[in-house]
Amino acid sequence: MAALGLSWALLLGAVAVPASAAPPPSEMPRFLRQLDRAVNAGDWTLQCNSSQFCQIIGVVRPPRDHIGVRTVVMIERGVGAGEAPRLRLAFLDSLGDLAVPAPEDHWRLVSRGLMRGKALPLGLGPVEPDGAYRASPQAAAAIIAALQSWPGAAVHNGERRIARMPRGDLARLMRRMERLQHPGADPLTPEERSAWLQEYHYTILPPGAAEAVEGRAPDAVERACPGRALANRPFLFRIGPAHRLWIAECPEGNRIFLHPDGAEPILFEMRDAGGTIQPHDYAGVDGDGLLVLHLLGKNQRTDCGQRVRFGWTGSGFAMILQQRYARCRGVPHEFWPRVWYPTSWRYADAPPSDGGNAPTPPQEINLPPADQGGSPP
View 1: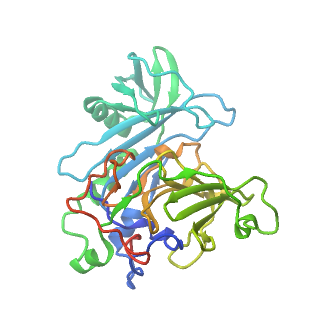
View 2 (view 1 turned 180 degrees about the vertical axis):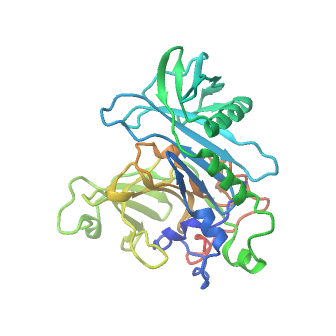
View 3 (view 1 turned 90 degrees about the horizontal axis):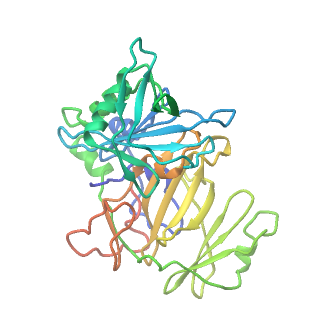
């Protein structure tokens, strides 16, 4: 699926991130603002992106007594005419951990608040890598219809309730999704499409290129925490033939330095389009050799906010995935809505591993120079 630049303009401005051009001077078109804005209805949240791919996530708040299991319901739908919604379910404890038994064939979705109770089979497949279960197309259609019309529901194993289900006006969000994905007349002028919707193709170094190494930290890294010494030794990664990456742990959040060989380290800061620094809490390098940043949610919460992944192109960092979920409900970031990813990306000599939805571009990609080609408008 093609992904075009939109919402990560909010994250533009790291020194180590190539930037294509300044944002267009005109205001973002209303239709794109509607796509970018998360809309809540009870426990449900609708989030679309600029390619009009839409996702709905629903989960109840963690119980105060920390007793009980919650169901995370994830609905997504592509933009093709007549495309059916897809449904995934995950089961969490009060802390957000996937610490419940695997679903059994006789688990049912049972209505609540109806004079006559109704029940539906879940029709779940095997567990997926992130711990969720995908419903069959037939079960997905029936469950989504029920969640739109029933006052409430829960997952049961016979008479025993297994997990709570989200509540709220899901039908309203489904109607809004339909309007955003199929608005009728084109909501954007050709000039707006040219200015705001661009394609982004990346070739990044393969997994394993980000290799942990030993080395003495430069003074700038040692002094990374304002007014205090580092509590732990900084992490050091070799991310290419001529660059290293330092990650220093500070109380106010990890600090990242790009360190070209033979030069001074450069502080990696996230800034919005207005130049304001966006503080991040976690920063690290995952098993795929991708740089991962977590921007805190409201009240400095870590169970909400934004999760961003970058790949090293050899000259700068190119964003591979941005997820955003503003509701602090103990939901693992793997389940957060995806609000931006490039049109396509690939490793230099291996296929991408981030979900497998990034086909190799039809022709060879030329890596952008350091001041071009990495950030959407």
